[in-house]
Length: 452
Image 1 (cartoon, rainbow, N blue to C red):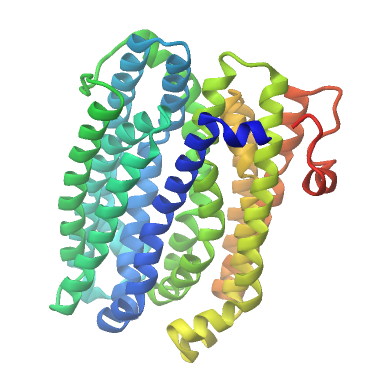
Image 2 (image 1 turned 45 degrees about the vertical axis):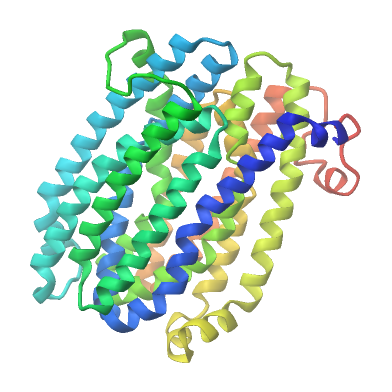
């Protein structure tokens, strides 16, 4: 472990881990700071509408960029083998897939906007026109993010997190600041979405410049390389299904609440989610470098070396998850009372504490998730997440009707533990003789594994 800490590879991984955390935290922190002002000036209903539009766009983006993990894996493998033509063909093929999916999903959102506003969400009739236009701006934003995703994944596959993170932090922070300015001047959801689209286009261009500078000069236009497309689609079809199941923990709960309880309930629930979600988000962002890192090493190194890296990451994973979960779970109501006021805290009940525990349980699977992707076990990973996601959606749809937003938070408790089965699969793949890291967890945390 000491040698690893002193190695250039470990130092680069540390920079990438810190960059991932910064990337994840930038928007939530800006949103947490801006939320009290935006909530007061926009009102609970319009603020909730903005959250719903963002949820719809975010959900669509997840479907449009669902092949990103496959692209990152094969770019990393080509990089590990020194195959520059393979890198370029994979990037351009990924651009083809993302553009196609972005157009399909974006067009579907554009067409479905009126029906969604009138029949799916409980929206004030006076806001119908604004909501439809905001969703349609979001459909174009979705296409922009599809292209940007390819560029960001390219940089990450080369373990160059800092350039893309810097661009993301600046653009997202500016979007929130401009939203505050617009609302202060009387603007609403439509104006915020228009500015978001404009600034996202600028960010996309800057990401392309970062690729040319830090990765190498290459054409970023789509291409139809049959071999590269076949590899990405083969792995990526399961990756796409995996992304679909991940919607359970990013957008679906808010969409269900919006359909059953209305936009005001979405506002209350979303604020609680903003506080609790970083438990998983920070853990996932800090360890995201494991995916390209292990993918590159998987091309040339033994199972034993990969196992040592995964066990070390698991110990760090657990430490981060527990450290982040306990304060929010214990002091959630106090946090809300200081931040949003007593009335808001009363309306949310135990929602924040339940969400904190749920995200903490989910955060404990981060090492397994990235390891499974790096090892090419996308089919197993996807099936497991689909089962866990289906169970969570079923329970959520029932509990929301009986326990309101606290029921949605309680339903999230299922997902994390159901996905821990991945650790057993990793054990069987990398070591048939050694005890499973999960089974030896207390020993690993206290003493460390001798071979590490």
